[in-house]
Image 1: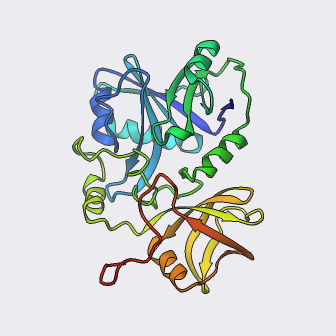
Image 2: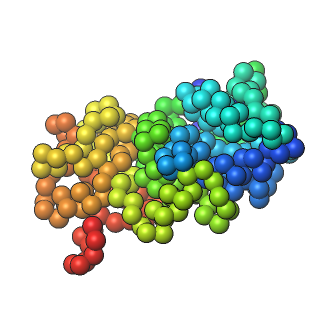
Length: 290
């Protein structure tokens, strides 16, 4: 029953009379209807619809916490501060007081109660388990490492910003926000909404997340996935012989139809669609667009 703290995460605290409507109008998901100790996976986009930041928003009483990549925390804090203008909103980095972590395969609520923390279901995928927020001064009874959690996430082919897609470069659909419950198109406007709504309704996302497997350990992330001498995608997170990639679905489909080998460096790899997604690598019927 693994549990671990995640030192690569930061925690921001958002309060104030206007903070719920403030967040709701900026980010890709609905926070106005969050229940207590519930979370949403979400992003803050550029006006062009690219992912600038991704994070979890957790409601706890009259406060919302943001569990975000530590490398992005300062920039996210500055961006939120820039947007708040005269709104009654306070945003603070409380990572020195509050740590983030993950639990999978055990009773998260019982663990949180025993260790004095807050647990919430990971909103992206049930198999990921739960996330936790706990006092940074605590010494909780963890039973795993951050590397164990990474292996668990990679086995499920769930992408992570910064590792599997570059911030400021990827659209939410390319990172599968639509399958991992990171967007709500019924909530009204948010920054970049027109672009991603158009992509949603037209079905124009060509780059998607794929699971990567090999017969031996994969090289480090960042390498191109190649078919017939041409890149079809890029390897992201890796753990042993398993990895996550962002790839052009049309190019992978074409390579498979032609019987071309898919390689990363000298290694042959298999690319498959994650079980939680519904796009396909099967050949499209004649006459359909690629």
